[in-house]
Length: 509
Image 1 (tube, rainbow, N blue to C red):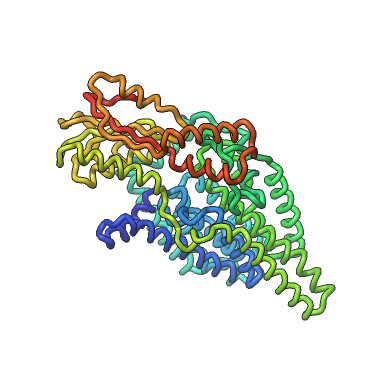
Image 2: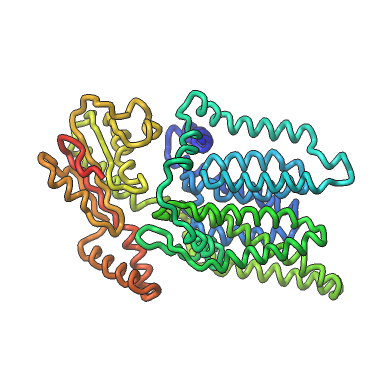
């Protein structure tokens, strides 16, 4: 859905078109989500749940890294709102009707931001509906949602889904295209290896808490399924214990179990190669699993036992010690980020440097105001090549391109339809640790001329990268920490962009 871009259009317009406004707006949205999560946690579980939730959020934000929290990319934007949605859905299940509009709003937003959240939010809605239908209260005035909450929730839902409905009737029919893709046009799925990826992300030292994402040739590697099995078993035991005590944690645990069930199915349906952004939704899910499990263990099992055995003064001392220990444990991994937490780097700075270099070279080579056909090739994530297109447009060139499905990206006025142009440019992007075969293809095309080139590594650095990568590939864990850090730094800079001027598009992938 277009909701993210409608929301970001406001700060973009107010700033006079300054791209930094999008980063600032995204940071403010995430800050508001954190505050709202804390508020809902306080309503549901008081100081105990707030403490556990804040610790979980601190670890999650450490795992996400600062630049993720200011990046307005649609896989990253729903991460914290998804946590807020689950807490709001739990609140609705326990008939805190004030949170009904919040649950509708957050569910609508995250479902539109990334398709993975559609089954997750749908499963949560089913659990809440079944719980409300099967657990009625004796007081009829609190059993049903008040009219004002229903009206407000309905208005919020209609406002947020209206753009999707308009697109469905008179636009590009994006919803139908998504349905058709999953029904007809799927590629090769990862299968049961996806359960291993989910298991790795659920571990106590997984990527959600700052652990390294295991990636080989750009694809996330699976791990053990034991954390997934253990989480399901532990939550099942806690759910039974909470249900016997009629504890408020029961619907929360059922919600989380439903999320895990849907996540397990979704993880097996991910297409290969499994890029890291395709599984980033597992990070907030892992945080919620741990927060709900720890809090339920304390409130359902530990605290009742303490009340039976300890005097009240001793209980207060034990609770204070537990809170202090939790804060200290959360702080230990956070100190490793150093100054980055007070001075976060902007996203994709290496790509930005490469694009800026190439656009500058092209501006010096091409006449101002020229009409260009520009086609990017070889860029699997559609980042750097598209950055060159955007840079040329910002520099005053008239650009036509076939990049983007059905003109959705650049608009109908820039869609290539055999218009008369002054020249044709092919932007060849060579991702990290890839062979420049497309560059060779362009060089071999008659009449092709290299007009701009950027390489983030020297030849010596490229040889070092190849050696370190081979060592890591042949034996996992063979690299010392300094060598592993050096490899990561080289990979981050390993980007080559070559722009060719030719009679037509060269190196068609």
